[in-house]
Each structure stands twice: as C-alpha cells, then as structure tokens.
Amino acid sequence: MAEYAKLIDVSKCTGCRGCQLACKQWNSQPAKQTENYGTYQNPPDLQANTWTLIRFQEVEDKGGKVKWLFRKDGCMHCTDAACVKVCPSGALHTTEVGTVALNRELCIGCKECVSACPFNIPRYDRKTDKVYKCDLCLSRIKADLIPACAKACPTGAITFGEKDKMVKKAYARVKELGGDASVYGDKFVGGTHVMYVLDEKPEVYEHLPKNPSVPLSVILWKDILKPLSLLAAGGVIAGSFLHYIIHGPKLPDEESGQETKGGE
Image (cartoon, rainbow, N blue to C red; front, side, top):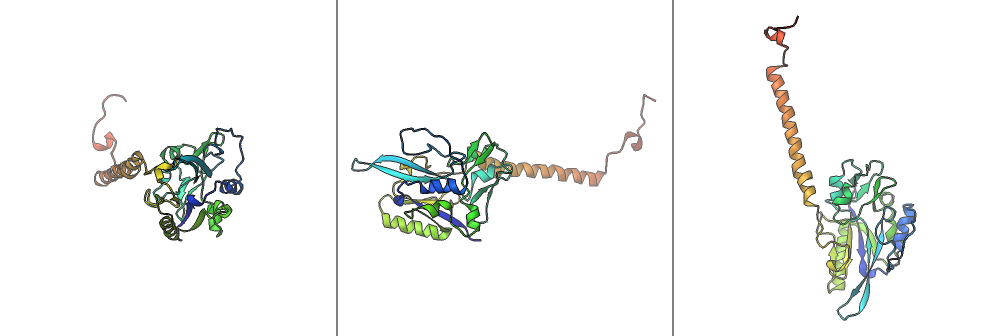
C-alpha cells in the first residue's frame, strides 16, 4: 500500500480553527473549561482531548509591522518514530500507510513516548492513565476518506494524498512563494508524514524544533545496547545447551562414585 502524507501550507491558513473543531468532532473529544491567557490561541496547548491545535503567534516583519503567524500543530507521524521505538507494549506502531497509530487498549501509561518525542506531541491523561495523540484519521484513510482536518479546511491550507505527490506539491509551492519559504518535515526523522510549507524560516515559529531527531539515549538503548544484551543472553543460553550436550546432566554424588560421610 502506498504511503500517504498531509501537507500544511501555513501561507494559506487564516486561523479559523475549522480543522481543530473537525478533529474534536470526528474523534468525539470532550471539551474542557479553559482560561484566557491573553491570546486568541485556545486551548493554550495540545491536550489529551485536543490533538490538533492552531497556534497563534505575533511577529514583527522587516518593515517593523506586526503580523500574525498561524500554524496547525499535531503529531508529525515520523518514519523513524522515537515514540514507537520506546513504547514497551506495542501500543504505538507504524501503519501500512506510514502513519503512527496508537492502540489505547495496549497503552500502559508509562509516558516513555512523552519524553522521547522530539516534537513534544503525546499527552498523558491522569484520569484514564493513557496517552493520546492524532492518528491522522486512520479509520477515514482506510475508508478512502481524507482526514477530518483536511476535509474541513476552507482555504486549501491542508491537503492529503500519496506522500511522493505531497512532497512535489510542497516544493512547487515553495518555489512559487520565494523569499524565506521552505519545506519542513521531509529531511529529518526518516521523513515525516505531516509536512509544512513555511513562509518564514523554521526558527521563527514557536514550538517547532529546527532540527528534530530521535534522542541519543533512545538510539543507544534501542539500536545498540538492547540488541547486544539480547545477543549476550542468546550466547549464554547457547553455551549452556552446548555444555549439556557435551557433558550431559550433572549427576548426584552417589551416582558419581563418591561416598557420603556423616548422617544415616
């Protein structure tokens, strides 16, 4: 099956939050009481019941004028996903279309994925002792439907399709925009299945890492130390089996010709 990806063109986003609402509606996410922190951004961050968030950011342009930057935030669905690497129960896994899905029945609430994610996406809920995040509407994809956020977007800022086509579309749009425009997501963590067309440099956007990567501690444990430990354990078992074949089982003292002294 072909890999699919979502492309977010922030230059077309108006901050309407239609995608945010559509995500909540499709996934039956309950609303919670929020507080005003002096920004139009609401809620203030991703939550266990908010998997898609429009970030509002004020920046000063080269002419000294203030302008809005809007960016849809959520799971990036990495190919080399740190959350999948560290998940001990298999709750987080890569799907046949390249996205990262979460089986909450298998989730044990260990929060390893929360610490490992370079984008700070998974959210833990104390009440359910589970972790939550966007699954890119996997149920819709399997039914030949596009994700709810892409369906609801009124400006075409969010599009969805085969990954190769989305990458080509992203670079064509960057060429059209010019200036500091760039494609974000296809060059790190094995390539993400959510990509951005940014009209400013990546470092301008809040909560968007410039060069995200799988944490070194995860690489050392999962890719080096754990395989070596399994190899060592296998060597011990193989050595024990070989010893048994060559020498046989250890016999009791009386069967080996030794006399027992003392006792009856």
